[in-house]
Length: 88
Image (cartoon, rainbow, N blue to C red; front, side):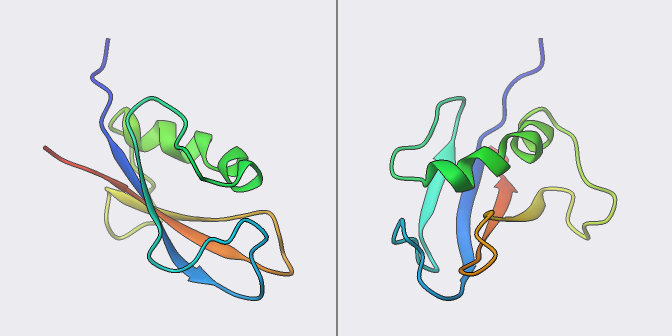
C-alpha cells in the first residue's frame, strides 16, 4: 500500500463574504482525517485533488507537481484553496 503524504490546504484568495469566515492565510493539514473548522461545502470539492496529491500523483497543467488550486462552490463569494503536498 502506498504511503499517504500530508497535504496542506491554504486559503490563497477570498472575495466577497465567506459564510464560514475563511480568510487568506487560513491553513489546515490533511493526514487522512477531515480537518476541523473547514467549511463542508468547500471540503466536498477537495477530495479528488487531495487523493491525487496524497498518493503521489500530480496534475500535468500545474507548474509545480506538489501543488494545485481548487475553488469553493460559492460563485458569488469564492474562496480559493492551494493544496500543497508536504514532503518530509
